[in-house]
Length: 408
Image 1 (tube, rainbow, N blue to C red):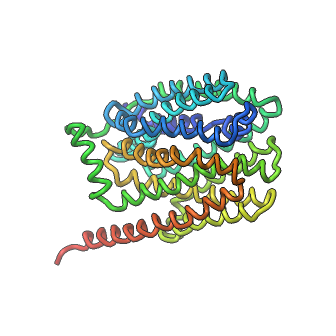
Image 2: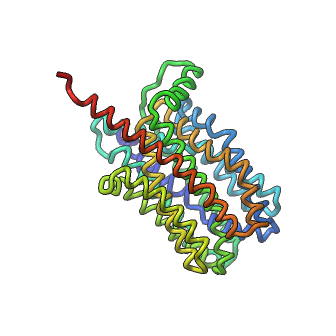
Image 3: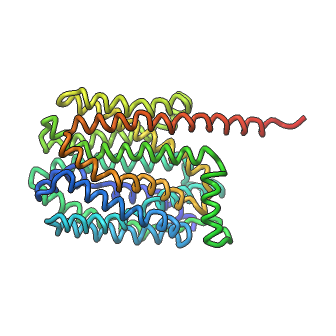
């Protein structure tokens, strides 16, 4: 078992790479606009994608905890492959909606299960002093970094493929979508303790952990939700923003690549920065950067506004690595995939209600006014989650120090 289990780590890295190697993403908005869709309709497709995930996110995470992480990843990869074939055949608003549903099912099965399997594998290797593991925290940061790097490379590839046509980009995506299915077959389930409790008891343990167990877990989940939601909004504004700033479409992929590599590098060195700066300083930096980025995008013109978007990406890489490592470290293995899925669920459920409104704002108010709206909402929202999180981290460390002091 040891050899295949060791291979799990590298296989999951490759799986994360190809799941994020989305050559279609940097040009998805122009692609749909080419079929006559408005920004409101584009965001409606994404709201349906989010709705699909919202309905399946927590059940799929629970399935991964009970049925097995490998099975969830394998079935999810099948839906991914089918989804990209549907995208290749799509040519209407209804077709793109159907594609988003299929892709959403696949994503919901994969989301949470990949992080949980990687964490389980690393914990088992470390506990049994087996070679090949680099530590659960480092592996999570590395996976996030690899996924962001894959998105960057995909951006470069997209800019090259678009020299032929957008349809060539779609065809390439359909072919790339088959790779994760092949990689999923190589995974093995990591040994982990299985609690002998009922489904109701399992659900109760999750609620108790989030609400009454460790306060840091709840506020870390809330921070992931807030920062994740801002990232999703800006993600769908970027391409419209670049059009607004007069950037040629053949440059979109290169900009996307630079943004993705920024997330990758930030995630890769987040733990090092935490050691150098301290958790408090790093969390303040994570909170300030996206606000500065939005202000720069609002005030900047042309390429200067585009460059200001890097501040948002730096914060994204740092926050993903720091928050997810902190969350998974405090969550028991038997419910880890479920908790990861619940966090993603929170982001999706809010986007369902607000995504189409964001598209409407872009169509009716314009890019600048929409960015101002985001700034007015998220400047206080990020503060409201980071301040309590800092307070609870300080209390947790104080409690740990007191328990570590031997009694007289």
